[in-house]
Length: 205
Length: 205
DNA sequence: CCGTGAAGTGACTGATCAGTCAATCCACAC
DNA sequence: GTGTGGATTGACTGATCAGTCACTTCACGG
Image (cartoon, rainbow over all chains, first blue to last red; front, side, top):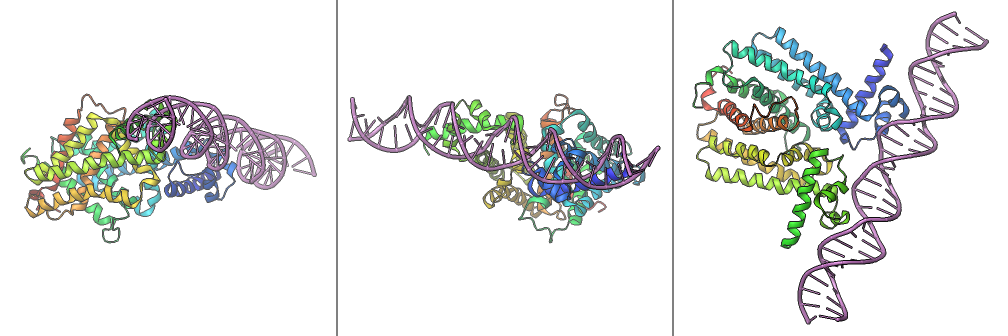
């Protein structure tokens, strides 16, 4: 795939992210996407097989970035706690930089039937596997409590971040100005650090 | 609304829950719902205004149960921690009893544009408000850390439960037999208890 | 038993749209 | 300057489906 093709695909993908975020996947028309991208309707089908293919491509491309970030955190972060912090921070920064993308990844992608094929599950779970390894190492190093399974720790962390961003994206009663993302991020990290901490393990079960 | 009408509506609603859970809201045909319910196609429109109305009715009816449960927990639970436990337990029991319902509430309802009207937001946020009050009381009683805002605590708790149930419902690689819901529930409660605990507050920030 | 209106029926329709395709344009090689 | 093949175009089509409606059946009161 040459440079020009990659660029054109990216233009379409970015337009699609904007349109999907605005109207939701099923209410979005492929014509809206081509208009937003400034290309002819038919061109969409030159670069992508179908509307589904566009959404899945968004997921695959951006999810790989996330997985790369987890990898990077594991290599560069001083300890397990800092590594988790880096991942959470990356997600919140991604939201600040492109709320539309997060909206699509959180709300549209998981709702598409075609999304659930073995290839995508593998990619999806790679993220969780990376996080689990951080937790596991943290337990071995005696930083994290041994009585919390890494898999549950991963889901709890993911859910906390996911639900919070969902509030930012959707809840009109949520005051974003008074409660900036950095504050939300810090509070999540605080709660999780305490929740997973080895020091809490002895507390009443 | 007489008894017979209520019953018939309930039959349709339950059929819709099954169909929506199976295929997702947008891929579900209203004809599938009438077949599943064993009523004529046109009858759907005698009892409900539209397909959207059916989904929103599912939300409203069941969400009221959840809100009632939060209220009940606040009245009957000994302390804030036990109260939260009761709410979490109710959600996991709802999943065991009717996974389809949870699938619809978690995945389909929040994805419907029409869902986001002031009336539904009000109802939706009533649940969060109830939880926030539990947290607030916990802080006043010195059980929960004062440096975590009740609103974030609520989102973290909701997200943890939500993400976990999502794994049960969707992730084929997740081994439900080896990891029963009761175990998941206990681990979540453990992590949250530690994460929100007053005792952790002094730990390095 | 008749009248009334609610409950129930399912064939039909009008609108919607994803995807196709035949035609044209364009860049580059020879 | 000509040929080749990919890129681009947008009008069109075929299928899909939510919702309608004219009709039938039923329950019940008088």
